[in-house]
Amino acid sequence: MIYLVRHGQTEYNRERRIQGHVDSQLTEVGVRQANAVGRLLRDLIRDTAGWRIISSPLGRARATAEIIAGKLGNLPVELDARIQEMSWGSYDGRLRSEIEADHPETFGKSGWAFDAPTDGESYEVVAARVSDWLASLPPEPQRRIIAVSHGISGRVIRGLYANLPRDEAGQQDVPQDAVFLLQHGTVGRIDCEPVE
Image (cartoon, rainbow, N blue to C red; front, side, top):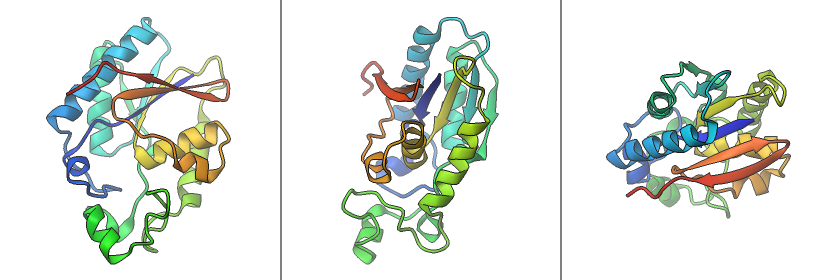
């Protein structure tokens, strides 16, 4: 099984900036979200023997993973760039409203899209690295993974795991206060205690 987590709220999330491969610190809310996820996972897992925490190397995911690890008896955090966020290239770090004003087609009908500039990553690039990561994991039922990732890459992970069409994968929620259980080809959502 895989417990998939999105990093806690960041300053850029609060400002509605595209993060991509640039980083932003967790807010106080983000730290509380990471703690709530850690408590939830502690209650769900109980015995951490054989469990691994794998995180995107980007700071916001790594910080979230380290908080979660602390709740689970300080499991080591492994870093894997294959689950890091999509790069938006020259859009990384820009306000979403600026991009929407300059390039209204960028986010498509769904509010998210892979129409980053040519210096960004395409859906195919993100899907290829995520697929490679999924294929590298032990088979079920030996798989005991907590993965800390991001909004778009997390959608791609869940979409590929559940064999969803690309458009449907893009419509999935990306909460920062929930855990997704990926097991037996299905994806389930488990919400944390409310965080304010």
